[in-house]
Length: 198
Image (cartoon, rainbow, N blue to C red; front, side, top):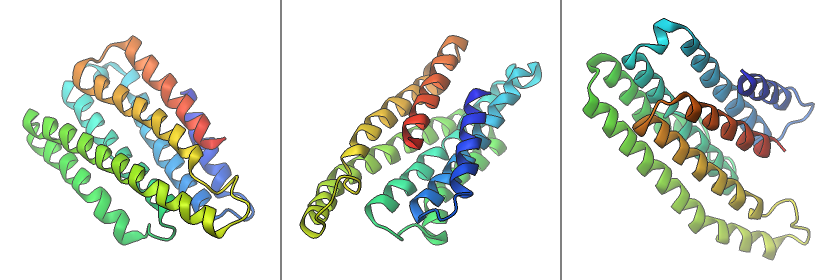
């Protein structure tokens, strides 16, 4: 509940700013998307949802959409104006196909393949960022005299937080559905998004 309130509030704040820049607007939409994911998870307080392995796995498949959504933000940071309807559709389409496939087949093979694909996708995004960020910082330092607020050093720390977040998500999805671990996962989620918002 706390995650939903913070993320939804942050998203509406970013989108209702007087003159939000492109990154702020994109981050606002991402916050609203994650608020929807947290709202979905609130359904699991009801016994019908909480006792269904199929619905739990389907929910985790939907959560996988967060990976390409975050990747789009990284892409926009590194290559301004690269995010458009076409790149967005291209990024999320495989994840939507996995959701539909699992919803129809209930296949564990589809579910596991989805996890592997998502982990590989996240790894590729991290490697891409680590390759492109030094080039971006070099360009900034060579073309701008004041670089304190426009270089990417801040996002390296954020990347480490997201790596911990993804590891927690994979552990939750693959290895356990323990309520204590759920609490730790949502606490970490809230901390990550507070850092992003700040």
